Length: 139
Image (cartoon, rainbow, N blue to C red; front, side, top):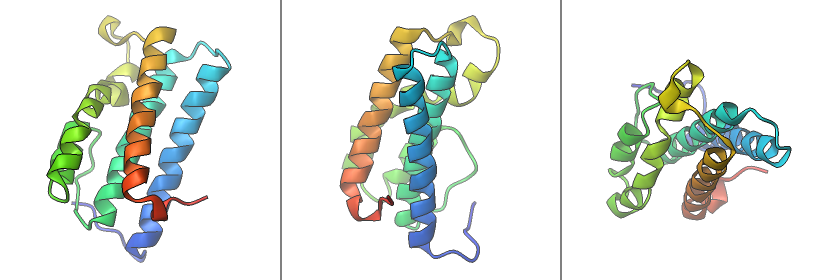
C-alpha cells in the first residue's frame, strides 16, 4: 500500500489533480490538433482518470496499491461512496489503454473515432470527481 511521506493529504491531492489535468489536457490538445497519435491520446486519458481516482482516494485517506487497474480503484472508491463509484463504472473501459495500448496488439488499435470517445469518457470522469471535490482543484 502506498503511503505519502512528508506531504499533507491536501498537498498530495492537489499534486494528483495537477498530474491528472496535465494528462487530459494533453490528450485534448493532440485530438484538437488532429495529430495522428491516437494510442497516445487513449493512454493519457486512462492516465488522467487513474490519477483523478487516486486523488479522490488520497482525499478520503484510502490507501491504494500501485496499479493501473481502474476497476480496482473503483472498488476502493466505493469505501468512501458506493453510489458515486457505481456511477463511474463506465471508466473501467479505459483500463486497457493504460498498458496494453503501449504494445503491439490489434485488439488495442485506436483510430480518431475511438480517441474521441475515450476523451469524452475521461472528461466525464474529470467533471464528476471535480464536482465532488471542487475545492481541491488547483489552478
